View (cartoon, rainbow over the protein chains, first blue to last red):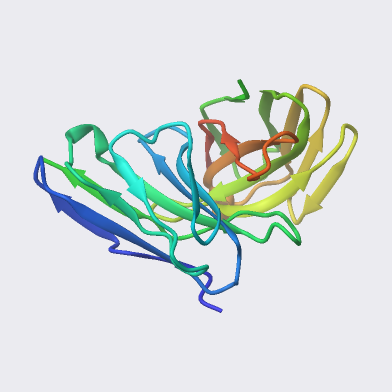
Length: 113
Length: 112
């Protein structure tokens, strides 16, 4: 198993540009999450999904959108990038029917200039 | 609102010098308290889950304990490879989607 994979690893965006951060897990987990981590801070929940076709907002959803068309994939969309979205983004997944440990991907570092 | 506060923000230890990291929390019914280790440029790596006051778990030089208001991560005779940021998170019983609320972490540096 590859676990949770994220692409790209690093990206520079100009203000107003759009992009999609990709997240894929091969563990057949039904719950998936997107977090952002600013320097010296903990992780803040952006969006989460409890299964294909079901998504909900977390603590800091403004400026982001998500979709969940399959169990494996949970992409995060930034429509109009702003400097405040400069951060490191982590995707995580959990098997709600088993040991409820969140497994994290390696992260995407995003710089908005 | 669930809250997690970790202290100290940063800790420097000599190799072999034992110490403890603190995680204070307020949550509307604790489902679980999680400890993660995060290396620079990497995603958080799971260490422990604690479910009830009085519970303890150990892994190599690390031992996590839990009370009704806080958790401690005890590091015994640390080595330089234990240098990392340690994150604490809580999961409320009420959240059906198993969301985690994280603290800001303790950055541990172990000097040889």
